[in-house]
Image (cartoon, rainbow, N blue to C red):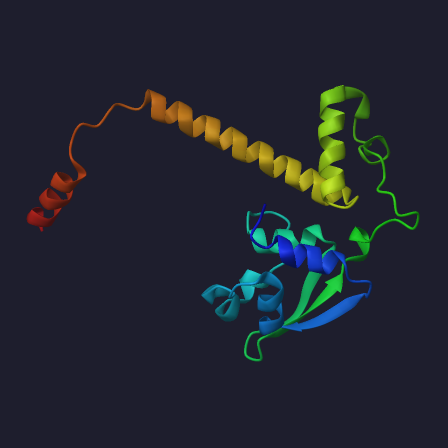
Length: 170
């Protein structure tokens, strides 16, 4: 579970279309202080779909986006993302209704997996697909790194010696 889950839970419980919060309000919801970068870098509050920033997964996963972030005043507005709003009947769409690219090519296990991603993103097919692709890329990268590490020659030189040699060569 992400350390920002309490923010996601808080936002999921709101019934309004937007909510203004100070950074102190966010910290009260989280139960811990925001990191340095939250107060000094606008990018920390970005609504990027790709990437692995856990904080944005909290608000995007809850169906919200950040808006009007004011670092100097330490405040922002969370705005409900209309494409993430729950459907009128309150039920998320079924995976078979959303995955229209080539549903006949999906195995039952793949359909089940995509339905789980869809449920995790509150019915947002784009976010579900982005999360599935991200997870697949991470797994592929891990496999590649493991293969490279396995095939790489074993280094028997102490790294301390290498640092000393480099220092002495200067």
